[in-house]
Amino acid sequence: MMNKGFSELFQSYGMTINGNNAYGQIKGFETNVIIRMLDNLSPVTVHISCYTTSEQKRAIERSLQAAAIKFFRFSFTDFGIKLGFNDITAGKLIKRLPDLLNQVIGILTEQGALSAKYCPVCGNEMVYESTKKANVDGFAITLSSDCIENLNKSIAEENKDFTEAPNNYVEGFFGALLGGVIGGIIAFILYMVGFVSAISAFVAALLGAYFYKKFHGKPNAVMIVIVAVTTLACMAASVVVIYTAAAAIGAEDAGVVMGAIEAFRFCMQDAEFSGMFYSDLAMSMMFSVLGIGYQIFVLAKSIKRKKAIQ
Picture (spheres, helix red, strand yellow):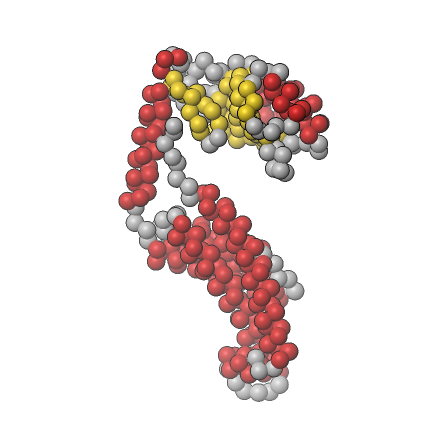
């Protein structure tokens, strides 16, 4: 259930409360509210449906940035603008919200954003008989039936093109490998200065996904698997390279003539050396899993295909 203070606030606007969601109109603009108290960045998300031109969006962006609102984030959507609010406590945020919403809606109105009387997609005045309230990313948004039909056609065509596009797994793998190698180099450098962290794996997975797509690999679930496995392998390889180099340097200092790999095998027979190797390998894998895990979460969201608007 929604926090009592938030519930009373949004009910005062005449909005309907459903669990942690509120829906209605504020100053003539169709408005959705989602309360997520566990969200540390934006526990209050507000979506305001409105039609704006590209020029109006730029003007709104400049005005919102100039307003310098604390604990505030915003981004434009295909159907309006999404706002994120936060404060030190819920009570303070509840007190601030009316003024903040007035300020934001004032900027929208001043810059010519069209209200709920107009379709947020095409900007045409809506006729009640030809409208539909659609569920879009958890928001209830009223659209003209023609726009819904056109949007669904575009979504279907995009998804069809994506499905029929070549997978290019081999090309994508080399892209992921390039990212993994760069991450491995970073891990090597960090280890040389005494750090073992998730940063290198995070960077490797990030670059791996980037180069995977740059090398024309299809961004799908297989991409996530290839990037994750390749990154993990490169992180493990970086530890092996580090200890192989250390073994080779040790052999040279001792005046023993042998190759780097042979020196590594010889040193692994020493309990202290092998113990350090396996300890650092395990730590590297642990941090790598953390770094890769976050990137998997990000990538999984990025590859989701649009669904037809219902």
